[in-house]
Amino acid sequence: MGNVQQTLQEGLAKGLFRRYALMGLAKTNLLSRRFVYDWALVERPHYAFGLLRSAVEARILGYRQLTAIEFGVAGGNGLLAMEKYAAEISQLVGIDIQVVGFDSGAGLPTLSDYRDLPYLWAPGDFAMDVASLESRLQSATLRLGPISETLPTFLEELGANAPIGFVAVDVDLWSSTRDCLELFDADPLTRLPRVWCYFDDIVETIPEVGELLAIREFNDAHESIKIRQPFNLRRNIPLQPVWAEQMWQAHSFHHPAYTQLIVSSPNRELPLEPE
Image (cartoon, rainbow, N blue to C red; front, top):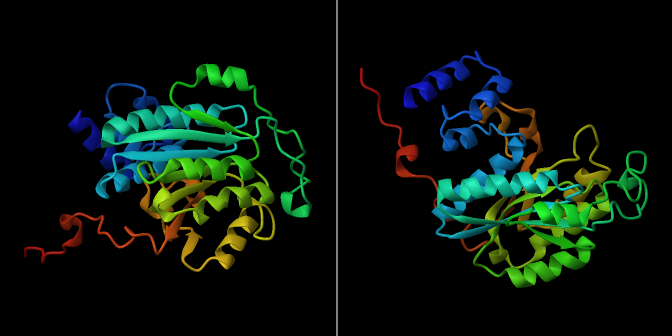
């Protein structure tokens, strides 16, 4: 297996393989599961990336549990995928990941004004068949109702033992995204010092509407927490995927563990190369 993976890595570095070929190999036993997740060779690679990165950091910081959230569950395909990836990554990293989905269950709410992009969405879009989804969930849980009501209750219950490390935001609207981002106003111990965030609906839009507007308004209103895109992230991810542009991080500068070192010593050394 090791020789196969080395050969593939060399080929990938030279651009000899395409993602669809690797996806096929990922379904065989030729690749280790860690390799599959390191290279995000799954149907929803952005979920795999956020879950793995947050799990590794949480483990380094000494946590035994972690929470991942999907805001905007709709039919439930994303939540089922997150549940599956979380179970496998939990075993790979050695940390328990609990997955929680937040949704009204009734589709999109009434749109407020132009900021909610009414030319793209309408109230009732993306309604959920709650019974069907719940019958297929194995470990993930649903929090049904307006996020502005269900999220504060959840955060009060969460505590500090299973901090939030990854958040997928797919609520489409400016107003709903604004409600989701209130999780960063809670006690800092309810989350990791750096939370990976995936924003689904920032493609082909502008900062004055939708999810991008909610992010900008949050950053303008907060000094000690910023939600930013990591520079050059796409360049440093295998295959340089376009979804990397939708991966952001929420940095809580005053988090008690923000300054704790998370990079191992071999990665902090640059010895002189031999002649």
